Image (cartoon, rainbow, N blue to C red; front, side, top):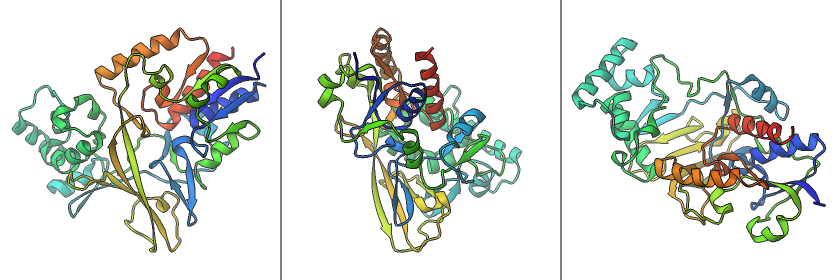
Length: 367
């Protein structure tokens, strides 16, 4: 007899939703995490009265009403709208690229004028079928915007020149011919008042949790205590890299407490020059419209991933997707383990998609 129905490796959003739902159905879970806190990458820590997004900005957005109602069980959400600013040298521009951006770049007023300007630059570039990210971006927004606001940021983010990157990375680049600075088109959007950690705390209430507990260091014991394993870590690591190593980009953060009310006037400012080493600065108080006398900022640096670093963004090019497919096929024959989340499924998920996938996994596993 097993001690638990499920061993859940990872106390992030996928693992917490799964644990919450199966516990309601009478299943016994043990949730473990190698970190010293729950919440995974949506963990928020209160510093100087400010809820700091420790692993980068997380803005909840969805068009799925069921998912919106689901997450609102656990926290009240504010009306925060994601409207990042792009800074190039001493110029600032609205994101996503919209009529405010086009007006400042070219002085155009109407959508037709903006489209004509992009077409003019595209004709000069003479790009028919984009073969790489640089050509794809120029086709979408023209050469001027590409060189000022896309090129340097993207090359920092991926650690490669734009001409070496596949064009699919940027095909979803938001371009709008309206005066609208809202980055997301989703119907529902906001930040939980009081931070994200409370959501995971409520989901895991009454469920056994062990922190600072590494699955791989305790694998022999852990593999025999539950009927099934829900694994939200890297799928290639679970199988001891038997087919090779999947690639990621990592991120590192430098966080500072500043003795001032307002540092940059916006929650998210992207730095698009290649010569500026960080990709963006987050000023956390603006997520919850904070008014205190101090502020907390985090500089984000895109980083080359190694096994000692935290994997953030899967590199979903053909080589890595083909490699993942081998692990997926191996996992599909494994009756003991279910893989979930962005590392387990080697896919970058927004938070609403993580919740939806976790809920569906519960339905699939408990008929």
